Image (cartoon, rainbow over all chains, first blue to last red; front, side):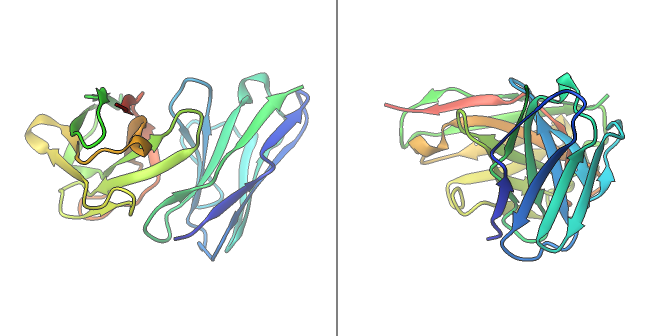
Length: 107
Length: 124
């Protein structure tokens, strides 16, 4: 099973700042990695697939990069509505796996 | 507009059974794989099971293999999860989630549409 480790656990930033979230895989997942945003009380929303492709309707301030074992989600300029938990997910091997999440807060 | 509506969650005793449903609309149901993903209270996301669009391919997490069965009824546009031998650790919100590309006989496993979830509580 591929284990995804996300860091940091919590990120506290001011509006307009750049957020950088990390996801590290226990073995290579090539580029088969997605990022999801989950706001309190809501279902997750797909942000990024195949490591760097924005899903339909996702604002340009969200971007993804990486391949192999190291991946990054960048929020270029944090907005108050970006407060959420962000999860990475791999689809390279079964069983599918999610990272433990990074909580983004506004200072 | 794609809609997924889960139902069937309840409080059940350990060892009991439950069947969850996910009613789908707004897309060609048998063209897309759909999965179940759960979230224990205050915890992260955990993939549970997936089924291809035509129902020909299924996958299960080790934690539920042999206890849960995923299926779909194309005539009713509905996905099911039969849950047997339930344990306390199965307590979670269960979401159904649709693949973001056509996947008739496989599972792509990127999820672009999610339901709002149904709560399963396993306790005596």
